[in-house]
Figure 1 (cartoon, helix red, strand yellow):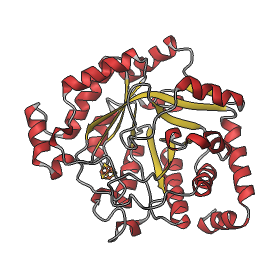
Figure 2 (cartoon, helix red, strand yellow):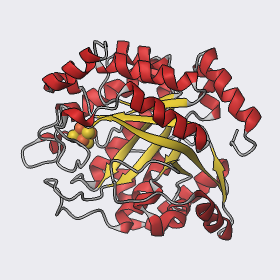
Figure 3 (cartoon, rainbow, N blue to C red):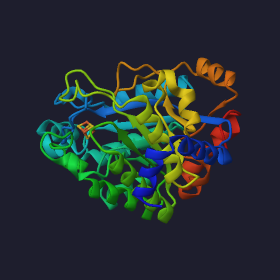
Length: 361
Ligand code: SF4
């Protein structure tokens, strides 16, 4: 099935599209909805790119988390019974900022990747599971990070090169060249890294481009069998950014994007939505084909969308129960991909299963 097939389904029979997506989701997930209890750690806001919608990026040389600051976060993670440390940062900061190099030198690291590797190892020592998002990485960098992460992530966002042109959101972002991002996702597949990717909906892409993005992810996922989840994230305008007045996608656009992803992607791939950006449509999203709510933190904010609070877990559970859904905690690696991980990480996972009855297996 090609782009034209899905475009005509969208145009002519939206109800059929949603029904097929719901049916496909139910065959595997039924009424189970998963999430990961995590702590979001922005290691630095410095980034070589300037995406038109980004409220995360900053030139601030003091935005780096120190090893001491990171250790304090790990204590909070233990105290809050979190499973996952979500490590996020701007892409290749040392390529753009002398201050980034100076910070890394001051703590005796030669690169951001080396520093993140160190932070991941601290995380594993505390028997917690790292999931890192560093943007574009080489094959060698991916292989280094595979050894100390439960999973890695890189949003494709879009396969459209059109959005790299002037007056479009990726004009100042060399890291957003779609082919480069697809290459990273493929390399992660060759290395058998449990992987999270996703689409950003509503940044100026067309339906045709959205479908193309999903078909490309589907092709890679089928070949390498490492894409464990695809996030369908709706653009949320951030004050002070070039796109602060750009309208967010309509509810229908967002929900139909979920159904399309469910239909196009392999059945075992989780379709995740960010619940804090969709407080009033969590249940509706499930009816359109989503089955996962991603990371929810009892401690940290969402640094990408700082004004959008996470749900309280028990209230979310109660709300879903009223609709006959069962909310289950999961780890940052889905069970069927654990076999890709080294024994050190698998032992930590085993401990979680032994000690936490609520983890979904
Ligand atoms: S790559 Fe990420 S952190 Fe950097 S500007 Fe773009 S959205 Fe922001």
